[in-house]
Image 1 (cartoon, rainbow, N blue to C red):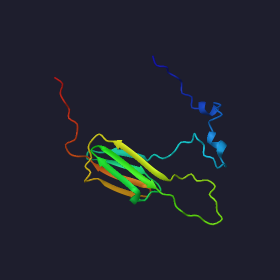
Image 2 (spheres, rainbow, N blue to C red):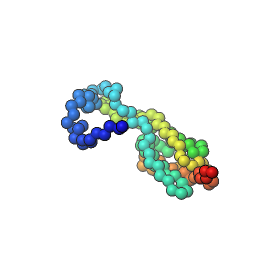
Image 3 (cartoon, rainbow, N blue to C red):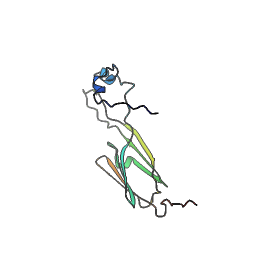
Image 4 (cartoon, one colour):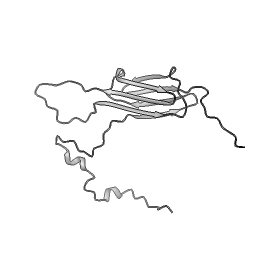
Length: 146
């Protein structure tokens, strides 16, 4: 039998947890906390209609030349390289940098095969928008049980 518990929205506020604000202990230091989550995943929304899938992926800081999209059957892969700007001014020192520089990658599988020849990609204001048309004839088939 499953255990059922009562949800208390104020539990997090009243609970004492000395490690809850672990990141705050390192504010102002040049040390990066080990427990800090890395934000290197591409965040995206996927929607579909009868004819195509639409993917909106956030890739801030990349240029359209540094983004690669690969479609193979129903597998879609997005990768990008976010490069660090080399702007150094004499007499200035970087105190804290929270922006991510490096490679990001995301791969996912769709229900239907995608037509790679009709696929369209547009990158505007840090958002990659993909239109992935479904291949005709790849819809599932209902089978009668006898």
